[in-house]
Length: 373
Image (tube, rainbow, N blue to C red; front, side, top):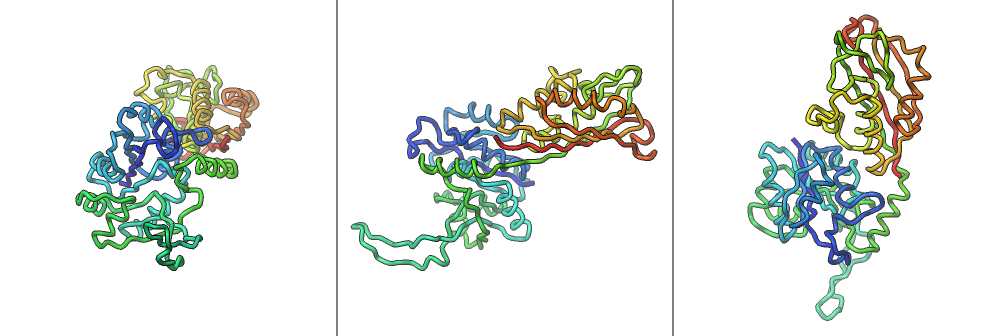
């Protein structure tokens, strides 16, 4: 199991804000939402350390993607509190600063890859490109270090759970977790960082971060799959259409496998959970909901996360019903539910193999392409 702690208990003092820094907006989302989006794609569990008094606001933003706890007075204290909220079954832990909100999922993946290859402590860093001076209290230069071996360290930083727990058990305080680990004599691997993982501390940092957002033209893709068994006595809804005379399928909602697969593809692309977490049996208000209704709600959630839907493709797998005669009608219904997005609809069989081939049910696979507004 891989977990992450997002240290977000810092104030907005240096930024000049009246709210915690993690709640400052960078483009369409707050800093904490940016950080959550990148980490939730690569870890199993996330704990956020929030400033006292703002826990409910953080829970509202995080939803079911993270556990929110009250942070401490220092960064190290907050990380210790976050560690205590994680299960001891964790293998690796990433520690990330909410202020480095634009660090990508790829950076986190590379940290995890290095941990899995045998390293016990991994941090991203960039070469020091400016000349550095050591200056005395009166402002005079003492020395000029060689900048070649120097690195500008970033987050997320990754550690084995056991090592990070031992490092924090000392009760020490440091500006990053690697410093505490180094004191134990552990070897810390430095991997290549990324320029966009800047620390947003001042309004000028935010302006730089916004340039990265504007320059990325960020696209994201996702895949979704759904399957249901036929059930006598149920009506069939498929591709946002009603199919009279056809046997329907089991399901919490109307069992429309095509729309459900599309919803999952969109949720995967936007890191917003899945069909179960958003519309599952724990949400009784969606019992019997139509596929079109779920698509409309999914579109709203994706748009609220700062994305627009560019294209959706769905392939229906089953012996019946025959899709061809209603393909155009189905594409129009799906596109309407997706606010006019481009839709492709295909159909196939499995030559007698499996649930669908044996005529016991129907399935669908979908892909989605979305882009950042």
